[in-house]
Length: 188
Image (cartoon, rainbow, N blue to C red; front, side):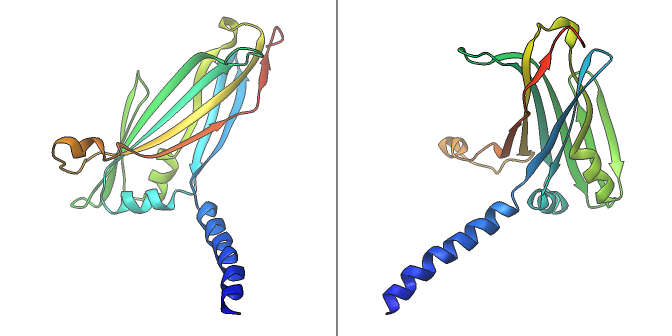
Protein backbone atom coordinates (compact mmCIF):
# COMPACT_ATOMS: atom_id res chain seq x y z
CA UNK A 1 0.00 0.00 0.00
CA UNK A 2 2.80 2.44 0.90
CA UNK A 3 4.65 1.77 -2.36
CA UNK A 4 1.51 2.49 -4.38
CA UNK A 5 0.92 5.71 -2.48
CA UNK A 6 4.52 6.83 -3.01
CA UNK A 7 4.40 6.01 -6.73
CA UNK A 8 1.22 8.09 -7.04
CA UNK A 9 2.43 11.04 -4.96
CA UNK A 10 5.95 11.29 -6.37
CA UNK A 11 4.88 12.30 -9.93
CA UNK A 12 2.37 14.79 -8.48
CA UNK A 13 5.04 16.42 -6.32
CA UNK A 14 7.42 16.55 -9.30
CA UNK A 15 4.78 18.27 -11.47
CA UNK A 16 4.01 20.84 -8.79
CA UNK A 17 7.67 21.66 -8.17
CA UNK A 18 8.51 21.91 -11.88
CA UNK A 19 5.51 24.18 -12.52
CA UNK A 20 6.56 26.60 -9.76
CA UNK A 21 10.16 26.58 -10.96
CA UNK A 22 9.21 27.58 -14.50
CA UNK A 23 6.71 30.22 -13.37
CA UNK A 24 9.37 32.56 -11.99
CA UNK A 25 11.95 32.38 -14.77
CA UNK A 26 12.96 35.69 -16.34
CA UNK A 27 11.62 36.36 -19.81
CA UNK A 28 11.77 38.98 -22.54
CA UNK A 29 8.67 41.09 -23.11
CA UNK A 30 8.72 41.90 -26.82
CA UNK A 31 10.46 42.47 -29.13
CA UNK A 32 8.03 45.04 -30.51
CA UNK A 33 9.01 46.08 -34.02
CA UNK A 34 7.91 49.24 -35.81
CA UNK A 35 9.08 50.89 -39.01
CA UNK A 36 9.37 54.65 -38.52
CA UNK A 37 10.89 56.93 -41.17
CA UNK A 38 12.28 53.90 -43.05
CA UNK A 39 14.08 52.64 -39.88
CA UNK A 40 13.37 49.39 -38.05
CA UNK A 41 12.82 50.33 -34.39
CA UNK A 42 12.80 47.65 -31.68
CA UNK A 43 11.46 47.95 -28.11
CA UNK A 44 11.84 45.28 -25.43
CA UNK A 45 12.06 44.74 -21.69
CA UNK A 46 13.15 42.04 -19.28
CA UNK A 47 10.55 40.79 -16.77
CA UNK A 48 10.38 38.41 -13.77
CA UNK A 49 13.90 39.30 -12.67
CA UNK A 50 13.53 38.90 -8.91
CA UNK A 51 16.67 36.73 -8.58
CA UNK A 52 18.72 39.25 -10.52
CA UNK A 53 17.28 42.11 -8.46
CA UNK A 54 18.26 40.37 -5.23
CA UNK A 55 21.85 39.97 -6.44
CA UNK A 56 22.07 43.65 -7.47
CA UNK A 57 20.60 44.82 -4.14
CA UNK A 58 23.15 42.70 -2.27
CA UNK A 59 25.96 44.80 -3.78
CA UNK A 60 27.23 42.52 -6.53
CA UNK A 61 27.97 44.49 -9.72
CA UNK A 62 26.24 43.18 -12.83
CA UNK A 63 26.61 43.66 -16.54
CA UNK A 64 23.45 43.20 -18.62
CA UNK A 65 24.02 42.78 -22.37
CA UNK A 66 21.16 43.24 -24.85
CA UNK A 67 21.94 41.92 -28.34
CA UNK A 68 19.32 42.60 -31.02
CA UNK A 69 19.83 40.88 -34.39
CA UNK A 70 18.00 41.32 -37.68
CA UNK A 71 17.81 38.03 -39.59
CA UNK A 72 16.55 37.35 -43.10
CA UNK A 73 14.40 34.24 -43.62
CA UNK A 74 15.49 31.74 -46.27
CA UNK A 75 13.40 28.72 -47.23
CA UNK A 76 15.96 26.05 -48.09
CA UNK A 77 19.10 27.64 -46.64
CA UNK A 78 20.00 28.69 -43.12
CA UNK A 79 18.65 32.12 -42.21
CA UNK A 80 20.94 35.05 -43.00
CA UNK A 81 22.34 37.42 -40.38
CA UNK A 82 21.82 41.01 -41.58
CA UNK A 83 22.53 43.48 -38.77
CA UNK A 84 22.94 43.65 -34.99
CA UNK A 85 23.01 46.16 -32.18
CA UNK A 86 24.61 45.45 -28.78
CA UNK A 87 23.88 47.49 -25.66
CA UNK A 88 25.87 46.93 -22.46
CA UNK A 89 24.53 48.16 -19.12
CA UNK A 90 26.52 48.02 -15.89
CA UNK A 91 24.96 48.31 -12.42
CA UNK A 92 26.75 48.75 -9.09
CA UNK A 93 25.37 49.54 -5.65
CA UNK A 94 27.42 51.98 -3.55
CA UNK A 95 26.76 51.29 0.15
CA UNK A 96 28.49 54.47 1.36
CA UNK A 97 26.36 56.81 -0.74
CA UNK A 98 23.29 54.54 -0.63
CA UNK A 99 22.81 54.88 -4.38
CA UNK A 100 23.01 52.82 -7.55
CA UNK A 101 25.54 53.68 -10.22
CA UNK A 102 24.63 52.63 -13.74
CA UNK A 103 26.11 53.10 -17.17
CA UNK A 104 25.07 52.14 -20.68
CA UNK A 105 27.16 51.82 -23.83
CA UNK A 106 25.73 51.10 -27.28
CA UNK A 107 28.93 51.18 -29.32
CA UNK A 108 28.76 54.94 -29.92
CA UNK A 109 27.40 56.66 -26.83
CA UNK A 110 28.13 56.16 -23.13
CA UNK A 111 25.56 57.25 -20.57
CA UNK A 112 26.19 57.29 -16.82
CA UNK A 113 23.49 57.80 -14.19
CA UNK A 114 23.03 57.59 -10.44
CA UNK A 115 19.78 56.40 -8.89
CA UNK A 116 18.59 56.68 -5.28
CA UNK A 117 15.47 54.66 -6.01
CA UNK A 118 15.76 51.04 -7.14
CA UNK A 119 12.47 51.16 -9.08
CA UNK A 120 13.71 53.99 -11.31
CA UNK A 121 16.93 52.02 -11.88
CA UNK A 122 14.96 48.89 -12.71
CA UNK A 123 12.94 50.66 -15.39
CA UNK A 124 16.07 52.17 -16.93
CA UNK A 125 18.30 49.11 -16.77
CA UNK A 126 15.88 46.37 -17.88
CA UNK A 127 14.07 48.27 -20.65
CA UNK A 128 15.35 49.18 -24.09
CA UNK A 129 13.29 51.47 -26.28
CA UNK A 130 13.99 52.94 -29.66
CA UNK A 131 16.80 50.64 -30.83
CA UNK A 132 17.49 51.61 -34.45
CA UNK A 133 18.38 48.31 -36.04
CA UNK A 134 18.51 48.98 -39.79
CA UNK A 135 17.19 51.16 -42.58
CA UNK A 136 14.70 49.37 -44.85
CA UNK A 137 16.08 51.12 -47.96
CA UNK A 138 19.29 49.11 -47.51
CA UNK A 139 17.47 45.78 -47.26
CA UNK A 140 16.18 43.49 -49.98
CA UNK A 141 12.48 42.79 -50.27
CA UNK A 142 11.88 39.63 -48.21
CA UNK A 143 10.75 38.27 -44.83
CA UNK A 144 12.80 39.06 -41.72
CA UNK A 145 12.65 38.48 -37.98
CA UNK A 146 14.39 39.89 -34.91
CA UNK A 147 16.30 37.76 -32.40
CA UNK A 148 16.94 39.20 -28.93
CA UNK A 149 19.61 37.77 -26.62
CA UNK A 150 19.91 39.03 -23.04
CA UNK A 151 22.94 37.97 -20.97
CA UNK A 152 23.92 38.72 -17.39
CA UNK A 153 27.48 38.66 -16.06
CA UNK A 154 28.93 39.32 -12.62
CA UNK A 155 31.56 42.04 -12.65
CA UNK A 156 33.83 40.48 -10.02
CA UNK A 157 34.94 36.92 -10.62
CA UNK A 158 35.87 34.74 -7.70
CA UNK A 159 39.63 34.33 -7.25
CA UNK A 160 40.19 30.99 -8.91
CA UNK A 161 43.56 29.41 -9.54
CA UNK A 162 44.69 27.77 -12.77
CA UNK A 163 42.39 25.25 -14.41
CA UNK A 164 39.43 25.94 -12.09
CA UNK A 165 38.94 29.29 -13.81
CA UNK A 166 37.57 27.48 -16.87
CA UNK A 167 34.95 25.68 -14.77
CA UNK A 168 33.35 28.86 -13.39
CA UNK A 169 30.79 30.17 -15.92
CA UNK A 170 31.35 33.74 -17.06
CA UNK A 171 27.71 34.30 -18.01
CA UNK A 172 25.11 33.92 -15.24
CA UNK A 173 21.96 34.03 -17.36
CA UNK A 174 21.12 33.89 -21.07
CA UNK A 175 17.63 34.43 -22.48
CA UNK A 176 16.80 34.27 -26.20
CA UNK A 177 13.56 35.24 -27.92
CA UNK A 178 12.64 35.63 -31.58
CA UNK A 179 9.90 37.78 -33.06
CA UNK A 180 7.40 36.64 -35.62
CA UNK A 181 8.35 37.08 -39.27
CA UNK A 182 7.57 40.42 -40.91
CA UNK A 183 7.82 41.47 -44.53
CA UNK A 184 9.87 44.34 -45.87
CA UNK A 185 8.83 45.38 -49.33
CA UNK A 186 8.38 48.29 -51.66
CA UNK A 187 5.56 49.82 -49.61
CA UNK A 188 7.78 50.88 -46.66
